Length: 264
Image 1 (cartoon, helix red, strand yellow):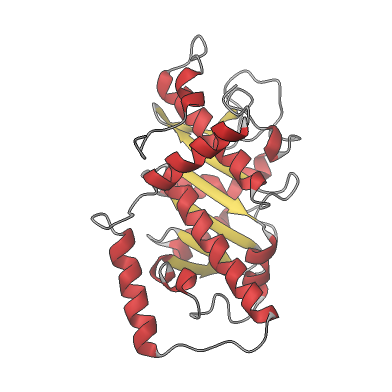
Image 2 (cartoon, rainbow, N blue to C red; image 1 turned 90 degrees about the horizontal axis):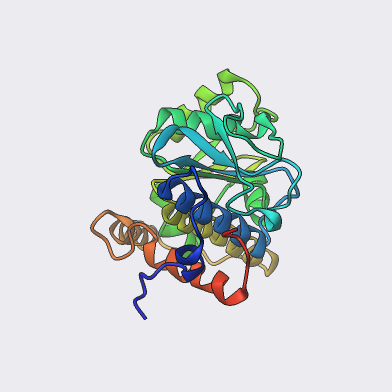
């Protein structure tokens, strides 16, 4: 087996008439991402979202239909919208534009971003609500330390003014802890967004677990600095694991083995 081989489910799924192969492949990968987020317990009923840019229509985006759980999302029922959240292709489903407010500003400001994930998981909200935020006490936190920024909670995001503050706080980074709220992750591909989401969620989970177990073991500043630098090297463009391709291919194969019908 080639570890870079993607899903046989996607490879066998016929492209619908009138749709490009690039869009269909993105739909299949995005639907797979929704199913994985649900599988790992990161979903929040109807209250969080994942978006993806249509590869050959870069001003249009795919999002989950309003009213469906993440476990019900498939490639064909994803909704195509423009940057304002207006549905631009025939769909049997509605869409909640308020859920796209955070995503749209990131997509518009950063054309290299293909996928944006915003979650309200138990552990990420737990860490986001702590005054200390993510602590430099685990390997999971330190290897992504250089990628993380923060945005203070202002209430549910509905206005353009806060969109600009989100973008200012995010800069060119790709992992945001939204204080008292959750996480926001951006990636140039579905694979890249997935691994970043997994890494920040895992780091938060480790911290909450450690705090429940007693006093934390502090690390020296040298160990912290060396670990952060190692993370930079590992996840840089020329590093050992820069873009999540191997991890993503493995997760698609996992969904295949589970028989999850996302590419339909």
